[in-house]
Image (tube, rainbow, N blue to C red; front, side, top):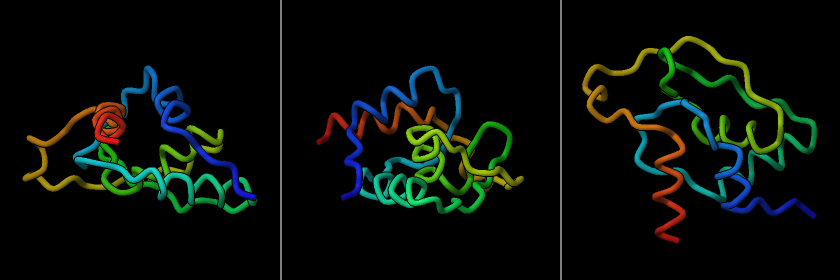
Length: 100
């Protein structure tokens, strides 16, 4: 049976993390699926980052923090139109968890 990841575990893993994103939300079920894959010994695909901003791979990054196996990082390019949408990754999860 797969380990159930809680919102509290994710918030704890993100505490003090300064990684940023342009995404507005993340999915708890998607994070749980990635953690289950990591626990099964599978390697997550690399995430793409532009400096401290995740361009692709928010769920994989969070799953890696929770599980203890961070994904590899590749250089990515954030669309200039997204620059005004940058926020801390931990803040979007906090908002998500308040919404239920």
